Every structure is written in C-alpha cells, then in structure tokens.
Length: 402
Image 1: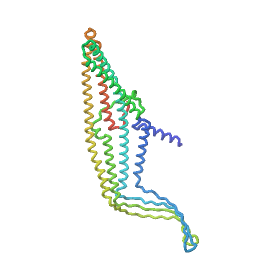
Image 2 (image 1 turned 180 degrees about the horizontal axis):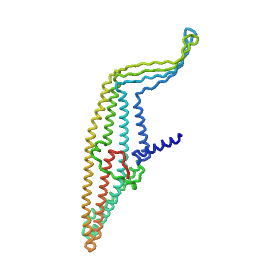
Image 3 (image 1 turned 90 degrees about the vertical axis):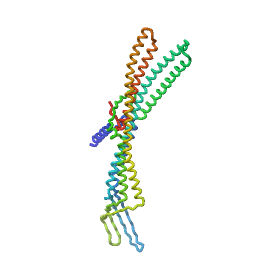
Image 4 (image 1 turned 120 degrees about the vertical axis):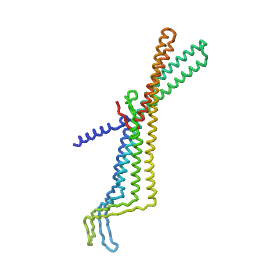
C-alpha cells in the first residue's frame, strides 16, 4: 500500500509547487527559493521547541578494588535524566511567540525576494518591447533625416544652401544612427536580463495588463511595510525573551535508571531500578543584565518607530507614481490631438503632390512624422505599465497571467 501513498504525496507536492508565485522563474531560482522556505520552516520548529531540555542517557561500568585487602566490587548502571524548565517568568511563552514572529518575518522576506525577481522579469520584458518600438521609431526618424540630407545636398549643389546647413543635416543623421546602435544594444541587454532569471520567450510571452493599485491597499499591504511590522514583532519578543533570561526560573529535575551492584565476596548487593526527582529555583545575577536588556529594548523601539517612517515614505512614493502616470496620460492625449492635425496636413500635401505643387519628399516626411508620434503613444503606454507594475509588485509577489 505504500506506493499509492507515495503517489498521492507526489501529486500533492506538484500542486503545492504550482501554487508557488515563482513558476516563471528559472529552475535554479525556483530551487533556491524552495530550499530557503525549507530552511526557515525548519528553523521555526527548532526555535519553537528549543526550551525543551534534552533527555540525557548514560551507561557506566565500574570495577573497584580495595587497597586494604582482596575485596573488590562491580557496578553497572544505565540511566536517563532530564532537567526541564517549567517556569521562566514568561520566557517559554515569549520564546514560542518569537519563533512564530520570526517565521512570519522570514516568510515576508521570501515574498519580497520573489516579488523583486518577478518585477525584474516583467519590467525587463516591458523594457524589451519598448526598445523594439523605439527601434522602429528611430528607423523612421532616420528616414526623415535621409530625406533632409538629400534636400540639403540638392540645394547646396544648386547654390541655394551653404555647407553649414548640409553639415547640420549630416550631423543629425549621424545622431540618429548612433541612437539606433544604442537601442540595438538596449534590446540585447534586456534579452540577457530576462535570460538571467527566466526561460520565457520575450517576443511571444503574453503580458498581463497592470491596473492602478488602490492607495489604501498600497499603504496597508505594501511588502516592505509588512516586513517592517513583522520585524517589529520579532524584535519585541526577542526583547521579552532576553528580559526573562535574567528573571527567576524553576526547573524540574528527574532521573530514572537501573543499577546492579555486586560486592562479590561481601554482602550488600543490589539489582534493580532507582529514581530521583527534585525542583530547583534559579535567580541569575549578572553585571551586564541591565545593559543587555536595554539594548534589546532599544532595538525593538527603533524598529517600531520605523513603521511610521516607512508608511510616510510610501505615501510619497505612491503620490509620485500616480503623478508620473498622469503625466504620461496627458502626453498621450496631446499626441492624439496632434495626430488629427497631421491627418489634415497629409491630406493637403497629398493634394499638392497630385497638383504638382508639392514634392513626394514633403508627403513622405509628414507620414513618417505621424508614425513617429504613434510610436510615442505606444512607448508612453508601456511607460505607464512599467509604473503600474512597480506598484503591483510592491504588494504582490506574482501576477496572474492572461
């Protein structure tokens, strides 16, 4: 029957792994995060029960020969003993609370790490898509510069423009070529950044759409703030445990064993069990007790004070992100209005080309300029998604996929 049980456990472990918020990350990072969780869960169990004293087992064999004669004896003993604290002035309760608080802190630390990796992944993909748009946009800008160089060269050859105008046009074309090269590098860089942490295909991966996080939810559930609160609780119980170490404690002492004593040629042999019990009261007196407790208390109070400071910082960060998104949206609205003006101009130029009063260069330049503005909209929309992604991963370690 053991094989069906093992199969069920295996399937359950697969379900647990599927629920983990790091399935998009590389297998290496997934394994590291899994082991990290195992480590802090094991530490939690250790800290929660480390107040329980060990059971000491021992076995002895003694041979005793008297110096005054030929008398000798043997003693064989097997025993178990324990000295267990049953009262530590609250220290046992605080130790268990400390273990639980530290586990929560470590769990949040791990969530922060996963959120940071997922944020890096999603933002790198967004930056990669943005760079692809910038590449197409720069190619259109380069075409316009090539048209401008052709026009300036024609005017220069006809004596209607000086060398400075032609040189400026060539310099502007060169600047666009340099921008194109820089964008090519940026595309490669983002691709490598993605490959460092995930096996997803940057070109085909279907990105989810991020929405604005509610301000109250952000200020209440932001992961750094939750971690700071959890660390405050951890420091609080650490302080309580430290303080209880210098207060009275009561321990139960107990031993149980088996002894066989053989005096050989003399009387008084013994073969049987024995036990003893007792209670001890301990009051530790340490010169450094006060300073040690005060140090632990100061660490706790410092962490408690940082909660309000962290929340204040988050209020500013959220407001900045919202204003940045608002600025992008206003710019997009402005560009959309400009597109309608481009449409009117393109219609007029096209009529002029057909009538022979305008050149094809004029029409192509305007069409390219309109497309450049359209790419600006796509780029700003990605910038908005990047800001929304930053807010999202400040609260959540993962993001549901479409």
